[in-house]
Figure 1 (cartoon, rainbow, N blue to C red):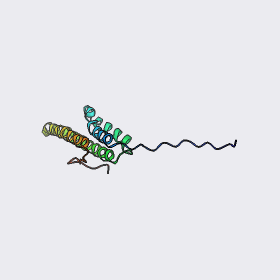
Figure 2 (cartoon, helix red, strand yellow):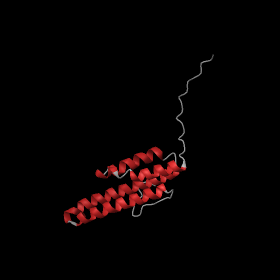
Figure 3 (cartoon, one colour):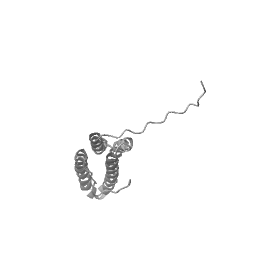
Figure 4 (cartoon, one colour):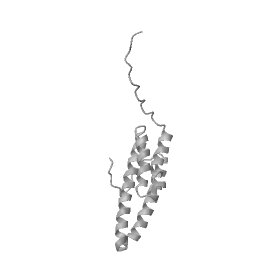
Length: 129
């Protein structure tokens, strides 16, 4: 028996997601921002983690993950600006508007993702392309 050099095992290629699984994970990328909303940065972390884990398995999840992360970064910036504007009292109104817009658009995006549709958030800065 010859001595063969041992080769390290290759990491397996990601298994593509079925259509229903891709729709489910895309929906989760949007809805995962909801529990994180209690901490400003929390609404970005969970969608980012889900997107990073699942993006190689489905182009649909990759699209929705980017959208969810971009939207939540944009909302975090808007919330910070609203807090700063509380010094001149207009921020008290704006923070409520930002919160309602965030909640409504997040739910719409989750429903669209679950239906298998591509959804782009309006008024979103596209940090990740």
